[in-house]
Image: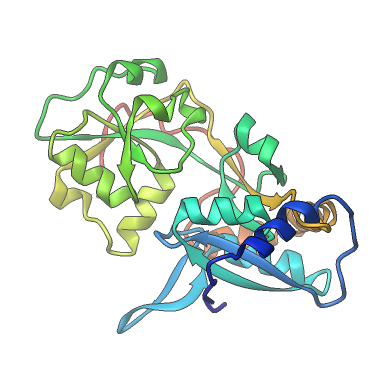
Length: 281
């Protein structure tokens, strides 16, 4: 899967994207589906493949393969563009891209996009600095008493948090953790599997940083979805293709095999971690 580039949209293309949803048309045989994801990466679900020279331009991960298998079942092809996250979500909203992967849902997103069935879930935790006293957090509502850092464009609805009441100036997890170390905040609410994915890629070392995570046992794992533009004429059909693929890959066991390939213990809903605080090794 190769990353391609996207030109800045013209006014005409924007208008075409906005008006496209007015008249439904079917997907064409071997149609190329335009997909985007976040260039900051979302390991182990979506990231750039590594070789001895570092990151390549090839996109891989659990989500990339789930998408590929789902589309191939229907004879569809695709391009995958890795973009700044807010640019990706806006491009899909306008219909410049057909869809995107790896999103938690919330009421606003459900209004703007067509939301697929969940195809994996992640455990919700918070990270804190071991150089300072551990925050007094027993359940998720306790987070609201703290200074929190998050990431621009992310939803924190699963934590019961409003991004407007957080410092969300960071563009990725690494920047938010550096703010934590610089005492800009008391905690960073995050999905555990993504943090471990960053560490597996060598992008962050929690032991060196002196950062630990605390569990939020009152919160269920957060489901993640693919989302389709409402402003493409084949959006409803594309959503059906994705949902059919998610169901078929789940029934066949292929989803679990892919999860194991990428070191994901369980792609479905599991029990949250119960340890109150754990250094990330």
